[in-house]
Amino acid sequence: MIEYSMPLFRPPSEAKSFILQATIGCSHNECTYCAMYRKETQKFRIRPMDEIKAIIDEASETDDFNRVFIADGNALVIPQKRLVEIMEYLNNKCTCLERINMYANIGDILRKRVDDLKVLRQLGLQMVYIGFESGDEIVLERIKKGANYEQTVRACKMLKEAGIKNSAMVLLGVGGVDRSFEHAYATGKLLTDTDPEYVGALSLQIRPGAPIYQEWIEGKFQLPDKFQMIKELEIIIENTNLTDGYFFANHVSNYLPIKAKFPEDKEMVLEEIRKVLRNRDESVLRPDYYRDVINQY
Ligand code: SF4
Image (cartoon, rainbow, N blue to C red; front, side, top):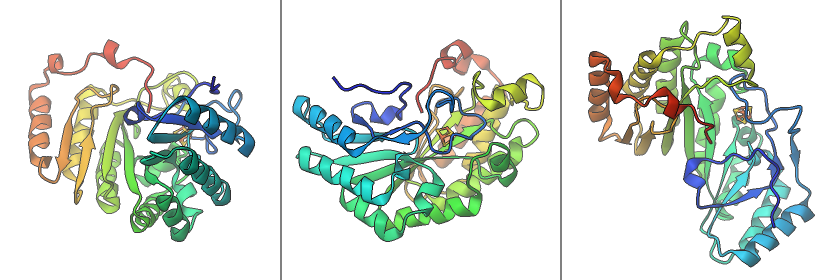
């Protein structure tokens, strides 16, 4: 039986995929809001190739999967030669393979060449999930995201050139009360400038183990309240223009779940959000007890 190193995270949309845990943890592991992989317990490493091949062998003998998600936190960090070897092996073993997806950090993309990305695309890399979190430079510095606005735009252009789809995650509330507007405004602009195929908006949940938890306890970080987070969603959407994409805010962490196809549904969801902000009726929002579960993202 395949043994996973826990904790293991994957996007909700990868529920039906075979999870190939080719790396353990996240090579960055600095984001202040993140409690996913702790340095002390889950030091980042790439599994040896023989271990990865043995996992693929075992999985392909027991299942006929067509979708693969390569974990953990930023599998695109795997050096090109090794990643190509893994993906070629997957293609050889899994005859009905349709797609391979993974998480990526901006730096992982920038360290590759467009031609490298094109090779990965040919081997089945369909989409990468990227945590933008914010477009505001001050917020990006504060949360130690490890990438700025310009680098994010540049990396996303490389993905487009290589034909790899981009699912961008943004985080409501991560700018705190003091930069709530700036965070939301710049995030919308960043989404317009990067034009991802999918956007997922999540709401910050402060968890013990994440450095921001201590900042919050000490009063150095103030979390916007539920209506302020919904206001951020409004500002982000107002400033987001996607050529042809989906905007989801249906993650369990959100107070107001929405799903929209851009550009056609943009005004409709804005009206929906504005109505909630006008009426301030909490009964239409997701209750906190429902939001307060351990999420996968
Ligand atoms: S948010 Fe993503 S990139 Fe940042 S530390 Fe957590 S897993 Fe790593």
